[in-house]
Length: 146
Figure 1: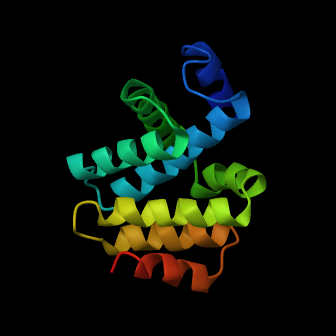
Figure 2: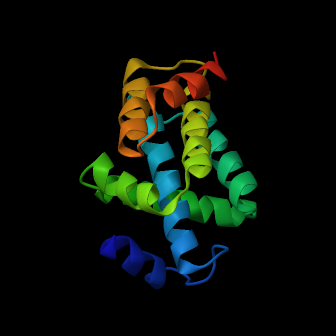
């Protein structure tokens, strides 16, 4: 997390909407989406566009801000040692409904290329556990897209 905070300060402070904590959570949530998208070793244009659309809508960002957020998120995903490291901050700071919305967004990314891969599902299942969401939440959010 220190690495992420330093990166955010170094790159255009204040350019992504919200407070410092909000920016951190936005980057981490997007990094989790990147992790899901790359789980099948393919980061398709449809997945990239889905992530950009999700962060634009959810965080009320311009397309330039969304692209900057995605770049930061990709760097964070590249440098992260584990899903636990990324999920911990989200788990501590988001409420149940926000975590469930994130889980739904992860499914949107997994289905973006019309090919939900077993590794994408595995990552989402792992993240649901790390976010202390129930198996029921996992199944219900998945069923929205099947």
